[in-house]
Image (cartoon, rainbow, N blue to C red; front, side, top):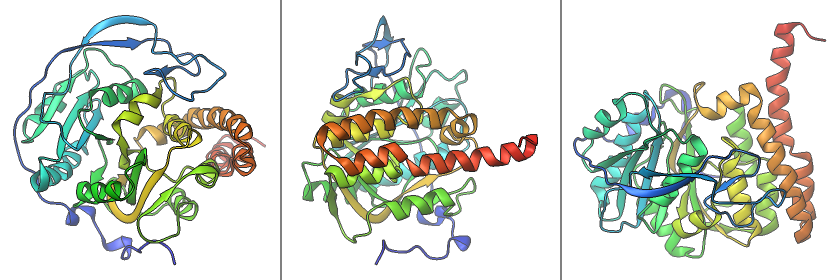
Length: 358
């Protein structure tokens, strides 16, 4: 038996699962922040644990600037930070989905949009209409990975979600994750089942997500995953959905992000945690909606080849780590990385046909 099945996706729209939007409020504070400016291979921020040994993990070299901090709140159990840049046609839906969670248990949850120096004030205006959601703006554009690292430091919660500005929390996400992490409190992160939606919010299941389903856990019910078996499955193909993950804030800060990458930094972080003995809690019930669309960062980076170069670099490092631990199956999976190679081939073949290359 596999995970619980969704009804036929052609007739479903995720908006039917979500409540209507609400409105109002936010403010910003100031705090000193030290950010690195180097983007050479293997740069981590903040100083990372179990990082790529081919380079020196460091907090960064650069200069001090004033960076806004998340508005002071009574410490929530979960702090959701939403990195955003420029106009997003989906951000309003994302905020609406988290506001429904605030309405159910706002003593457990804080939600903050982190604007990475957008040229216009569109994001701020949108957040002002969302009661209970706070807004902060970086004075300079940090880039994807460094802004994620900044979000980790901004978090005031025991646990943290770094949610995409186009993804959706489904009703009950917070309570489901809290229940799961009470059952497995030592887990460094936890993830629920994930529904995949398209630009129009329609439930879909393209090939990449069918493959993720094949590689992920088949067991029903809450479970804890760890060790070589988990590492091997992720190196065969990363079946996790980063925006859906609830991270232990302390662990997230301790391990840090690789800021010279934009698409494989999640796999790098997840593997470093697992190689260090971290365990992962998983609940197959779908409590999150991940949006696939042509303008997303992962789609853009795949089209220009950067994604595959990053995945190759992470896999090369992971292979060495796995061999040091005696995890031969994981090392083999890192060496062959079948889904990354297949994905690249599927991208290259249509291009060759268009150019007429042999």
